[in-house]
Length: 195
Length: 299
Ligand code: SF4
Image (cartoon, rainbow over all chains, first blue to last red; front, side, top):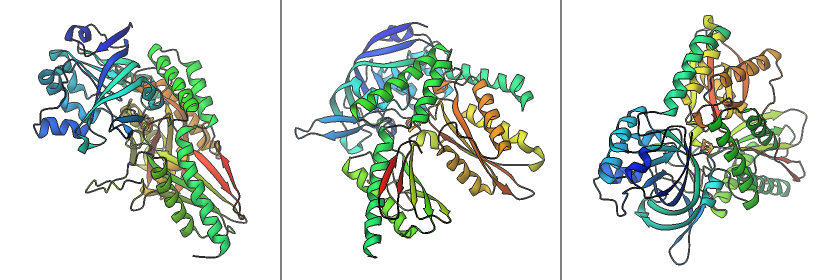
């Protein structure tokens, strides 16, 4: 269980080096994305107006305030449940070169194949820890598709973003699956006898 | 509208609701802080510890910066205990709670989450048809009002489960259902939190009771000793599953299990589970018949 400091955007080799159970802190830039953003890219076939190449994508719907000069100030930026966006994993990594998907609760197990094949990881954030995460976002540098507010495409500059846990790695391993399998085994083997 | 007393009271309730909603989102109760602290002390799993430490840091950052603990402002759920002699009708109390919610949302501003269920059109102010929802309790021989605000996030509310079990399968089936539900929920409801369980009544009452259960302070027990025993047993069983903080493994899957029960039909055995995440936000105001308001973070 190693700790890694990564600067994003990054390359395939950097995420392939991560193992399930490792922790990660991110420097550089991350991209905010959510259901509506991905529906526009993949179901409506629109080219994203910002490059996702090498990117770390965060499942989020930020609460922001618009400043007089048109820029946005973060009020509370947290993370949403990822499972319902699982189907976008393959095209995000294969066609757009994204390297990390960040959210809470995990992607569905079928995302493990694409993560392994095309070189990507799922990093679990501490869900609900928005107060902390908001302070780790130094600046909202770019906002595209403002009509989808708050599900726009966001580019954040971050400092010490994390901790994140490598929950699904590029080697086919998912901590969620391991934990679920172990919990089911415990229920069947010991706990069901106690109830 | 109404007498001077009614107008004063209505305003007091509205102001209290507005304050409760924002306050509960920023400053979590002592019992919850203690339970999260105890969880960190107990936790032996490395990833689990890291997550619990981060939750602590997050709470401290929210305290220092007067920030929202979590970004999900949820759906404001209110629990109103109305004394039989409180001089404002519940219809007006409900109106004041709605107005307070709306005002807090627009003034702070808070993220609005409410949409029409079919068209998904947002209302923009965290109110809507039948929202916020108010749970009522009427108290004889009393002239006060207690309002508790419990903003409930969607990550945990989506992890709600109901099953109409067979009476012959008894409490064993209840326990199994709770275990399967919480293990199946995994990391989605931001564990470790409070598991609310409603047993008995009818389908609607069971879920209503589960929702009441999550609004109790962490570690309180049902006054019925048999039900309290079930709470402790379920808490131990759930923590033995190893699901852990954020569903990534560890000793702490839940902070507490609260069970509420009602009598039921001879051929019914309903069980409902309502999950409340670690950010189990909650704040109360006590309103006197004269309109004095005392805020209480820990009730
Ligand atoms: S489940 Fe709770 S802690 Fe997690 S994001 Fe939702 S409201 Fe916040």
